[in-house]
Length: 451
Image (tube, rainbow, N blue to C red; front, side):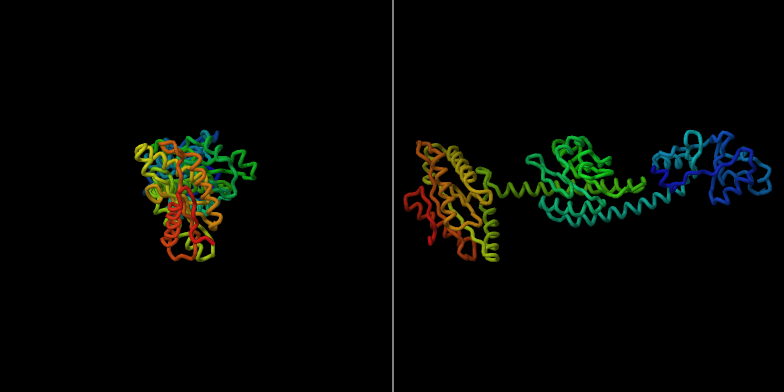
């Protein structure tokens, strides 16, 4: 249904009168139908002019008796502006304002099929404004839910709230900064992200169209809305085509007014999510850079403290076990003395890589300071920690070489959590075990308080 049809409420007829009919007949027709104008047509049904209340009053003011003697053709406005049924409402309104007219015939070719009035347009605009106000309030409520700065949490909230805003049964959002694969969150949707990006990568505004074949194979019918979440043309390289929100499976609106509100709501969601997700990514990157050692690429000491506190809390609440290990590069000062500080940096980077590749994905590797590293081993007792850390020590021994040709070695101290109340107490036991490893000749692993 077109915008004009929406304003007309689906009316598909127009009141007409012939040019030779008396004004009295026109007045009767308008009074019975409670309208302010009628179209004047010839014998072939073609539009000749328009007769409005204003035209009639202008010619018969003060002498109503002339209504029966004056033909419509003498009073009607011959210069008629009209619009097709598929005209945009903005164009209809502009035409009325520019030419100061209150009634506009809707034509099919030259044949009038309906009449649209300025009152109709105003009523529609007021209803649309009320709908837009409600949409803005809904988006404001969404914004209140997006207080977190964690990307995963933002996507989780969006996946819950946005489909509800549109009444959509299926939902996918993809967002990233181009440095890693974008984060993807779905709801009842298996559409391949790669196809989504290739198909609509050049679009900057929300677009609505038929669901593609891949969606129809999943049982989705009807329309699909795509909302790009890149920074737009001004964003340059940051305007990623993979940053998209896809919605489908909503009830058929059946009219242009609902579609217009739907598009308006999509634009609001686009603005909110672009800003919120971009801020979340910046926060995540800033947090990551502040917590990751620039030289070695592993976590820094303050990140370890936070993670260690989490394990302590989990251990006290649920009785989980975990261990921690101090690793120190043996005679690191002599490496700097022999090969220079640049060579020492290379050794630290290589040691960090060897530790990271020899431990598990669940383990937490950090640089504690200087040539010392700490590894947090969740769900691991001291026996398991001894095996794993000795594997790390052996990997460093076998893979890395000092400037003088000797292997790089590590001294390591391991401690299992024993109900310590602070992380410092646990670290102190692991550090004491490291000291024992050095006194024992280095290139070895010592367990604190072995059972």
